[in-house]
Image (spheres, helix red, strand yellow):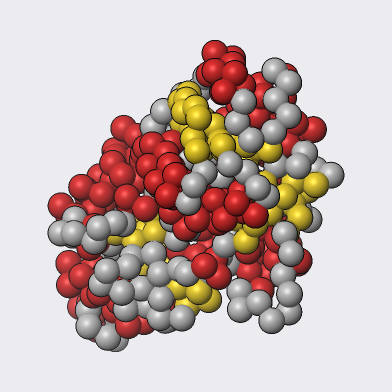
Length: 386
């Protein structure tokens, strides 16, 4: 009898091992690269924190989140992406935090036919939806959408001239392209345009040129804590006009670093930043507040930033798309990656923390103007404009 049991066990072992291997292979693998260190750390840390709060299963399948830090560096983001796809065999890549990194990842996603969901803002990440970008989606509002909000606000305040200072990279140049076109098209004259590096410790020369042009307002096209440097320098040099920032500063670290020099600043933001101030009939209030509640339960009151919410919305897209893709193929296969890409492109009315996502073959963001509100920094906090 013992011999028979041993024989049966020996015969069953390979089958059990094969079943276990197949089960593991069918887990959904989500590869993530975030800028958790370096100049963009104040953006990447809440994104990394958010992945720990996401569902561990989707449509009954276990989800493995494989998270790497690219240190705000483009080369590292590319290296991470190749590792996640080539070695870890992920089904989808989420990242990176910043525009230059995300743009650099597009070629790899297209080359390997792996869907990618970026957490960076530039519209150039997903526009136009060509042979490469058909594999790429993103969750943050386009800079063009936010530039429309800023220019509209400037006009309502009677602003006729503006100075511009932005990052000397794809984020700053993207903002310059869309903002200058919209502003000048609506009669707002740009009288100065300057650039600086994310790692710079002084922008005195650039700011002096802007101040000498005496604009009614200044737009700072930066993100995270490095966006505080031009603002603090403007205040030090006695600038009295109105200061605007982009949605790239919508976190508490920016408020902390900029301090009193931020008071009165205007910026466009996703509704999640002021979820508690949204009217009850706002279509995004419920889904935005849901993320706030989950994040603050884990990290404390007032810990939410819009950047973690971009990661959360990537999860919302996956929760909508994965069940559809599973009807066609299994995770871990090229067929599933293609099915997931197709399903992401077909997402409709998915309520996220930043807005309502409805993708299409020509729109891989899927947000409309419901995803933007105008916010002012008042007494060191965010106050939604009525």
